[in-house]
Amino acid sequence: MKAIWNNQVIAESDDTIVVENNHYFPPESVKAEFLRPSPVHTTCIWKGTASYYNLEVDGKENLDAAWYYPEPKPAAENITGRIAFWKGVKITA
Image 1 (tube, rainbow, N blue to C red):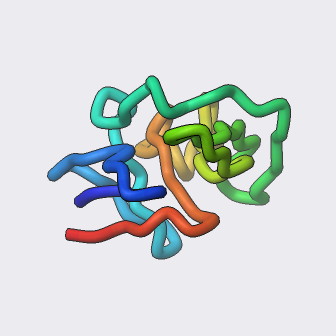
Image 2 (cartoon, one colour):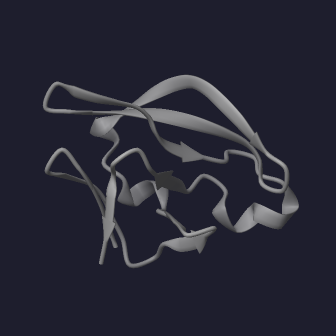
């Protein structure tokens, strides 16, 4: 699977985990040079607290377009630290 935004491959892996129709990529498969930490956090009732990244590619920014669960609740332990995308990031095989 690939995550693409602004004509750039942000992540690529054969080892994504799908939860609620979102592909969670292993952190080592994501190109860190495109990630900028965001102060935003949200809470999911069963997964726990999510942290976010802004994407920055070729001078364009996509705020809070990637998220991950650094310390998820037990029901979501399988996605610990994995990164998912939204806000116009195309996920393709």
